[in-house]
Image 1 (spheres, helix red, strand yellow):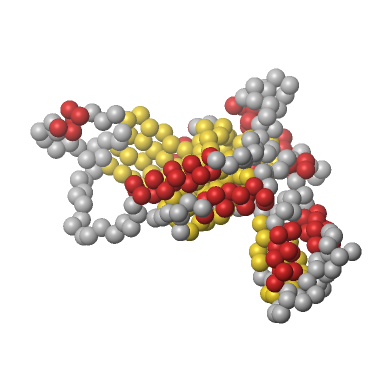
Image 2 (image 1 turned 120 degrees about the horizontal axis):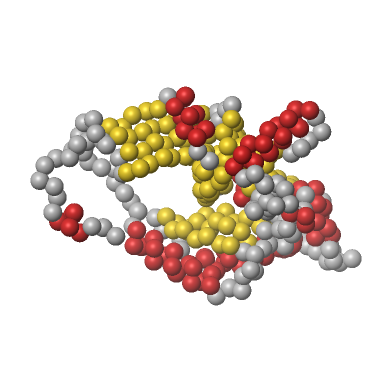
Length: 334
């Protein structure tokens, strides 16, 4: 809550200005080394996530551990992450370090090099939690070790005095086309529409509105549910555009491989009545099914799209299939 007294009764004299300065590499590494809790930031499509972790820093690497499932699957799709740590004692007395680089999983492995890295990671983590990765581990679900190579590092610090007071420039600010109230209302209406669906308990849908555009991120159970979600959102009259970035949830031991997804797509096309058209080709790419080629009729085209939308494990269907006219020899029954 704001202090109303401070707002209405400002100090009679100008306060000392804070001094902001950059930190060198050695100072940044010293801050990383003496702390043990930081934050990892990673992105997937239009979604950005920040999560706190325990860590240890040694020789240009940040070592940590987390659960083998969950956010790791997202991070490994875009391996490059940012890591931030800060220290502060008062509003203008703080230090902050940001490091960035690729994240790698650590396994015991079979080579001497793999074993050395694994032993070093375990040793560093046990300096923080002595019983880590033992039967007495207080957080046994954090069973996956990882490390981040510090490819870039930068830091800043602030002192409460010694700086020069800098006033805003008189230049006109960049125009902001966003309408906060309208976006909030639109987001609320979309959330109400989704609340009417019987979504799986596994699904976790995030709705954001930016300048009238709805962005859907998170996870849904399967492609059928994802289509239902999209339909509900498009059914909101005020929605004019949707960014669809939903992921499909599967238990890790049951998640189909790309080859299995492609096989299932072919199997769906061969179900009775057979979609008998050699002009239809399926491409499995990064979890998506892409239809290429020429269908012998609009009906065959629509049926192929419908069947592939239900393929378990596929993120969705990209339609690049053309349909011939007139509609002849559409579906052949076994």
